[in-house]
Length: 122
Image (cartoon, rainbow, N blue to C red; front, top):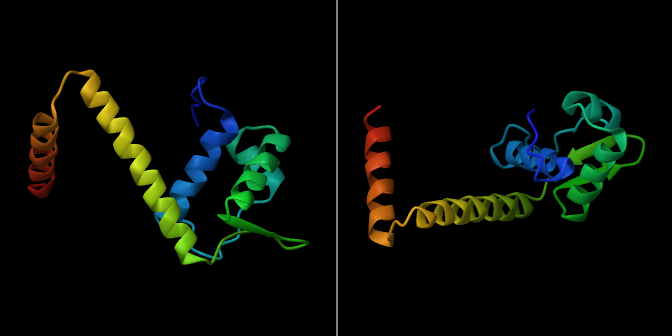
């Protein structure tokens, strides 16, 4: 994984794991890699891996069962909320980027429609 130097590594890895959860790659109840395995998988410090799981557990995205490991939450409402939050963040980034180019709302909507039409024809 190529890390953005402007964003904390733990946050980048947590975001990637959350994306796997909301897209179903990691379904509810799925066992997550152990902290050491996560550290090796992402080439990060084991303390960083521990922080990732601590933060995700605090958010209710995962749950650690002593002696068994860390698991994706089985609460589908949490996953739906997470998906909506991530989608809103993506929309905000997109709007900020397009507005910084000087595009107005109608131009942005026209671009979205054009891209959607192109993707429908593939």
